[in-house]
Length: 400
Image 1 (cartoon, rainbow, N blue to C red):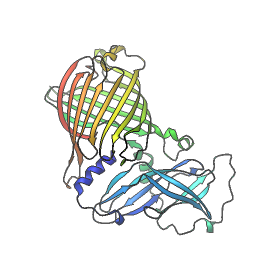
Image 2: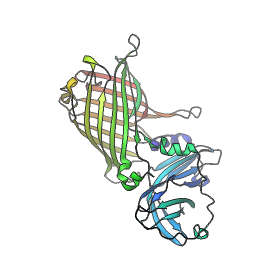
Image 3: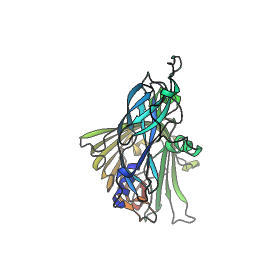
Image 4: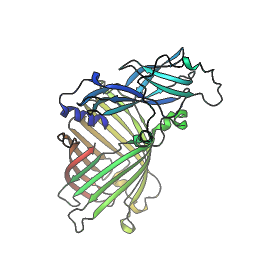
């Protein structure tokens, strides 16, 4: 989503300062690393000028770790690419991960020559049981003054990197309105990564960095009814494991695999008695793209699932939701997008979402999308999983 918002802002920003006016720094990890493990560092992009500026973030950086006379080459793998819009006298950052060589330990200096010469100190410990090499004298630890290493960061920075920075976007978020009751439909969604990059578990088993807790809420609101009640709401917590395939966003190749998710998901509407609805599913979802990810492309996201446990209050739900769905999208990150979602069931449903980017003036500095959503089929709400409806709504979408 950061790539999408940056693209939208780039279109509206007009003349920008070139990247050479920016200042780059490396922010070292908060905790010591382990020899042979993976380490996250942040490339901090500072804009000291009075105008907005654009920085195109690379997906790979070549660097080296040094200690005294020794040196180890390392490749830093970007966690997000694309254009970053840096506000006047503001900053942004991009995260990179690299693998520490197994024979590297001690107080090391990470050095990059491109896109600007930058350095940061990384403390590396050997795994338990390995003997430490003799540390060189302090006078040989660093070959040059670290004039561009950021000082120790305040507590707020630690909270940002160990809590706020673990939140990610999950499902689309929107608020839309139509003429048929229930008139309003809205959804918000997020996921939270359980392990940080510097934890012992994630260094020992890097795949565990793909474990997330997620939550999605989708509500239908009868805003024109007496006292404007909520008609039905689905609460959907999930435990997710995902693996993303790093793809060059400018590639013109054919179909590209983007990664996969496996999850356990609960859904219920929080009601009791005859209005109670709940289910549990285990699903597997993958994604493919055709075309440039930073331009026009087609994406196909199939999902297969099975019901887990008791579905006593909606025993025949598989006839309406089936065991699979597919989402097909054609669009451009900085342009319009048309998405079709189909539930593959005996009595399924089709949802079409047309979204168009919007950008307010600089007074509000707010980017979003105008969304038109069409629904035709069974079970728009969990309460009415076996009832057919057809409606169209329009409004705003924050995440697509």
